[in-house]
Image (cartoon, rainbow, N blue to C red):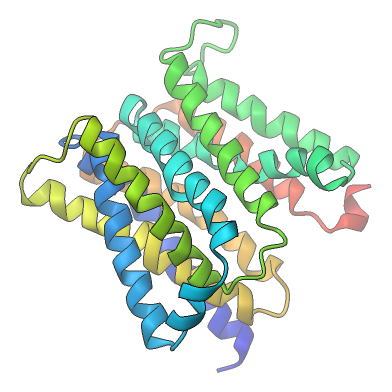
Length: 292
């Protein structure tokens, strides 16, 4: 099997797992607070990545270097990003939070202008207008001429999570750490912070096996295995676009699972808004010579 085919299989595995996490978030948050879910998932993911770092023989390197970067990166991911994301999922229907979260790639393109000195093309601007029109449709639940959002704070939190995620990756552009080592170090910084917040806040309560299982699932697959599979895909593929476009397969599967497992009726406004967001992302993926 050639490397591109392997990369596509790894990418499909990551996308398949990411398609399930909106459902897992809603199932877990039906019992747990966002902070409880964040702590449990982060602990599971930290343990998984730590075991892999040890297995790869990189633990000595992980303990010696890279902690200056981890000191700020760990506060952004997992702490800030996932707390804001889970808070959004706690307030919004899973379909809306999931769709809004897909605009992070556009947020990255716009933030790269002041942070990295990059230029926006005309197509980048068109892509942004199309995608954020979709955001407006979802936020107003189809009442596009009515500025009274159903849950304005939930929408703000979902969009804030995209800014945090985009900002994290832009600031990490010059990170020289191995991806798995860096992620484990970030979680090593973030986990004590989350533990402190949990102790001075709601504390951790036992909510039963279904809630615990959903939290473990989020830690293993959203933060752990999916990340590893995606890193393998990006590392092996000859051209990033071959795997980056696979992410477009995830939203329809996510909507179906939210309908079947959580019982969320799929709103027409979500479908229209999601189509606009994906269209905007598709325009952004066009080759640079076609975007001028």
